[in-house]
Structure formats: C-alpha cells, structure tokens
Amino acid sequence: MTVSSSTNSPVPGGIFPAGCPSRTVLDHVTSKWGILLLAALADGPQRWSQLRRRAEGISEKMLAQTLKTLEADGFVRRDAWPVIPPRVDYSLTSRGDDVVAVLKPLVTWIAEHAEEILVDASAQAILRDQTPVPVH
Amino acid sequence: MTVSSSTNSPVPGGIFPAGCPSRTVLDHVTSKWGILLLAALADGPQRWSQLRRRAEGISEKMLAQTLKTLEADGFVRRDAWPVIPPRVDYSLTSRGDDVVAVLKPLVTWIAEHAEEILVDASAQAILRDQTPVPVH
DNA sequence: CAGAATCCCATACGATACTG
DNA sequence: CAGTATCGTATGGGATTCTG
Image (cartoon, rainbow over all chains, first blue to last red; front, side, top):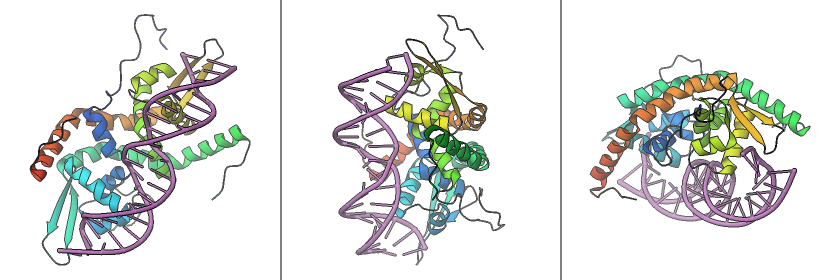
C-alpha cells in the first residue's frame, strides 16, 4: 500500500475518452445480445433460426439488429443461399474468432461463479433491509 | 461455446437459459459503466470523485447505482472514513480482482482494434448506401 | 465531499403482423 | 425460412436540486 505523495497520483487518467471508438465497439460487443450471439457462433456457423433458439429470449428485431451491427463491425459473416425456402448461415470472421478468444474467459468465469455471487447479493439484501428476499 | 448444456451435438443448446443467474451477473459486469468502473478500480483504490472523473461522462446517479450493484455482487468494497468532509474509498475485492483478470484482455483487445473496426464499418456503410457517412 | 431524491427523456427492447 | 415494418413500453440514463 503506497503512501501517496501529494504530487504523484497512483492512478492514471481516464479509462476511455467519452465517445471514442473503443467505447462504441465495447458497447457493440458487450451488448446484452452481442455477447450471447458471439458465444453461440463460437460453436460454428449457424442459421438464423438456430441462433434465435440458442440466444433464448431474443426477439426477431434484436436478432436482426445485433447481427447487422456485428456484421458491420466485421465480427460476423453472412452467407445467403439463393434457394427456396431461403437459407442463411452466420459465422465468425477471423476477427470474430479473435474477439471471442478474449470474450470466452469472461463468459466462462461468470458461468462458474454466478450462482455464488447472487447468493451473496441476496444475503446482503436481507441484512440491509431486514426483510426476506422475494421468492419467485 | 456451450456453458449450460452437456450434449455432444455439433451445435448444442442454449448459451444461457433466459433469466438465469449468469445472465444477471453478465449484465452487471458488462453494463456500460460496470466495465469502465471495474477497469478503473484495477489501478487501485480510488475515491468517488476520482472514479467520477476517470469514467468520463458518467452521471452521479449511474456512478452510485453501478457501484452499489458491483458492491452487492461482491466485486467492490466500500470504505468510509467518519471524517468531515467525508472520505470514501472504493476498491476491488479478491472476487473483483478475479473478474478484472478476465475482463482486462477484452478491454485491451478492443482498445487496440477499435479504430480499425470502425473504419471498416464506415467503409461498408458507404459501399452499401453509396452515400457519405454522416459527420457529426 | 459523497451522496440521495426527483424529474424527465431517449431508446433499447419486445410483441405482433406482414412478406418474398 | 429469414427476414421487415410498425407500434408500444420499460428502463437505462442524464440534469438538476438538496443535504449531512
């Protein structure tokens, strides 16, 4: 633990300037459905309807919108067959592979710890409010 | 990247069940300001006003709200001195250290690639619309 | 300094209906 | 099947004011 001098701050400046490119891309990748879709696509190319099922709870609107954003950012490739009925496959680009490589540890860590974390949070809520946590 | 299924099918089931603990914690950690505050706190304990400056653009409301959520989840510890004027330090818990360890590679990767990604996205928008990208 | 409380709005998001 | 279009709502989030 540093006894900080009055002139030398132990912590540097801002994390990201507001409105910089990193903020934008960060919002795309870590958006509610962005993470889930990237994680799903990590298992290989998949069709629209598969993605809709695997990202449980997503609406068609958000599926379309999120896939478009990820495609525009170069994380996802869209391949359409000119057949009836239509068939479209979505897959990760190499850039998508790269971002998934750094995203995966986060998702895995959270999957392994989420339960314990929320139990702690509930316990704290009880101690704070002296009222039972709602059971659904 | 299947976290919730144990089948051996090439493209397995859902990523996370809707409304499961992982979704909740994922939303907390990857929220707009959650990421930024965790990244800021990775540099050591800091006071309210420092965090407010480093997470550039955050409002007091969101700073308070996000810190409370992260504290309830056990990622952040809050230490208040009983002095006038008040002094409060925020720091990462060991669990906070753990999540930052998996979060930091993502933030770093995005910082290194964001510029290039958005240039590509703009170029695609031009090709798609045959109209210049709006300049704000 | 470190918040809490209040008001308000933009938009992210969901539900439904329609189409090539 | 793979979307688009439209509408309605919930809430994430900002600005301002007040206080110990």
